[in-house]
Image 1 (cartoon, rainbow, N blue to C red):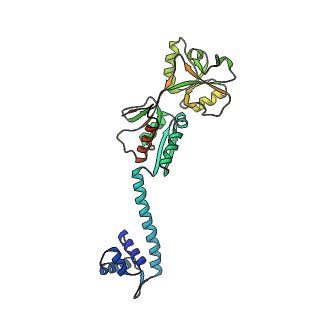
Image 2 (image 1 turned 60 degrees about the vertical axis):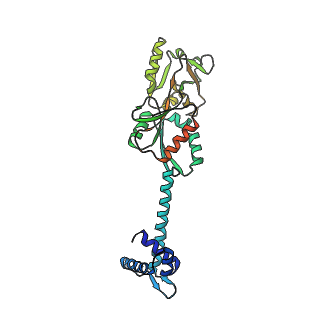
Image 3 (image 1 turned 90 degrees about the horizontal axis):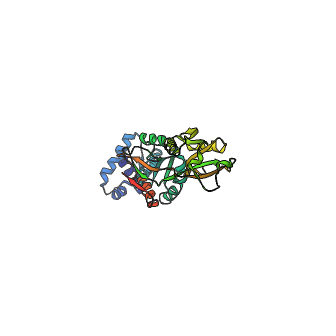
Length: 300
C-alpha cells in the first residue's frame, strides 16, 4: 500500500462509490475497482460492503480511513514544513555567543527577527570564544558571536564595532576611583590587584609596560562572569568589555572606561566557510546586517 492507494481509497470513501471516485480522479472505473480489490487482498481484509448505490465501510474499512487521513495529513504538513524550512520561515536556529555579547547584541536582533519569522525557534549556547568555535566546527551551531582573534580562513565574518574595556571597581575602595569621573587612566591601575579575561593578558601587559609598570594579575579566567563576581566580592578590579556592564546584579561595582590609552576589544559574527547555511540563518544574518549596517564590516 502506498500514498496513491491511500488517496484513491479516501476518494472512494468520500464519494461513496467507486464510479464517482473514478470521475473525481479522472480515471476509468474498472482500473480503480481492481485497485481497491488488490488493496483488500494485500491487507487480507474486506474494506467495503458494496451496495447498489453506495459502498458501506466495514470495521477494517473505517480503521483504514482513519489511518489514511492521519498519514496523508502528516504528509501534507511535512511538505508545508519543508517549503517553510526552505524559505527560512520555519525551523530551529542554533547560535553560540560569548556571554557579554549575548546579553547586549542578541535580544534586539532576535526580537526583530521573530516579528518576521515567528515560527523559527532558537537554541542558544554561551561560552568563551574557543568554546563557540568548537561548536561551529562540530556543526552544533550555525552562527557564532565571538571576540577576536579567530581563524579568518575557516570562518566568514561580520566585524562588530570596537568596544572599550572598562574597570569594574568595588565602591568600598575610594582610592581606586580617582576623580569620580567615568574614566580611569591605565597608569592608575599600577599596583592594583587585577582580574582579567585570559584573552586580554598580552595586550594589557604590553600597554602597562609602555607606562613603566608590570600589571598585578590576581586572577585570569576564560569567562567574564567569575571575575565580575570576584570584583563584587572585593577581591580585585575586573577588566572587562563594556558590554559586560550589568551582567551581574550588583550595587557594589562602579565601571570606568580605561583611557590613556584606550584598551579595546573587537567582536564578530562568524559562520563556517563552504558549509551549508540554512535559510533561517541566512535570514538572520541579513536582518543583523540591515539593523547594524552603519557600523559593521563584512569580511569574506
